Length: 482
Image 1 (cartoon, helix red, strand yellow):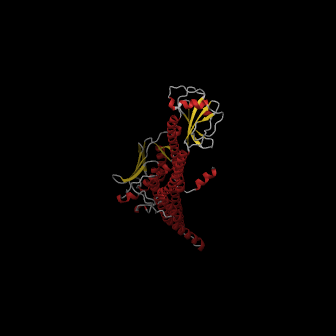
Image 2: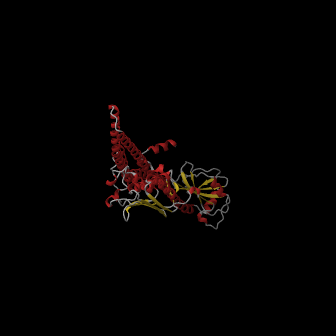
Image 3: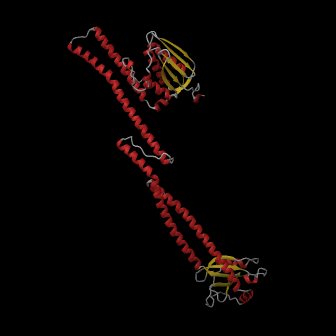
């Protein structure tokens, strides 16, 4: 059995579907055929019983029974051989039989027949199958009272009348019916298997297309392939095809973004690396030629190298932050105090802009986010405000009902530049001379979106820029501790 199951599981899906359809049809046809055969058998037996009842009543009277019993021999033998189609005999309680002249033959006496002779209250016929002395199947009717005597006559004690007819014609009809049902069932099962295979092929044709598409993607890495799907189709295969198309589109977009990120990162890394190489070559040449640089130039050169190293470190850190997966972030998400996070970021901003006035009006608010990522995002917003604020300027931070606003009084952002401020590596023309990687606001947008919030930048009335961060609230405790 296990071997058959393993072989079945090794078959292709269309072959398994065809086998299942054929098996289901075979079971249904077998059940219908067997039921039909038994119903026809019972109907034929009922006809034989009706025929037997009518003939037996006309061919044997009460006087015949009396005479036959009086002259009953000790053992029964075949009749005188004259043609007849009816078996007719009398059976006694001890199993002895008396065959009526012209009877077709002698019917074997069974326990049912002997028990009938011992039932003095027997009024109805008893029908059963038996065999004659030659082994032929017969249908037997046994009664204690011949039909011609009427139901009011008391039966002879210890005597019953056996009438029988041959079942040869009936059995031939049943055998023919069984053969026909078997042939029809076989044709039906074969046809069902073929139809099931055809239906499976038609139904799995979209799956074949999907398989070919997957194999094509695996072979060529071509994510532009799409499986055609009818707009009004809502079956499982159509849903699977749409999911595959959506997956390949997402993968293609992700690969494009990855390639763009690599290209942008290479472009951004080229400038500080080129500057570093130039400065180091100047220092090396100075040492090799024995012509030291003036102290002021050497100091400026080392300061430039240090600044470029800091810029490279910041750029690499930003790239690492953007490359972190969703799973890595999700493991560190917890309920944090937005107010405490903003206060910590403000402390770092005051160190970076000691000449600026930074005011804060913060109300308590709790959010679900990764603490370090959220603080980094707020620091990036404040760094932009510090970077573009004039000397002695003011930065205003306000937090109320989950909405954080940070306003500076710098030159502001041009209207045509606002749609690009959150793009990776995008920097406005006025900011390209300032330090930065162009990834700070991209990190802000990604962190805020992952926390379920929104971030926007806009020009402030009276000049400057206002950054707005909206984050949904969370319970003051984590769910598992509540």
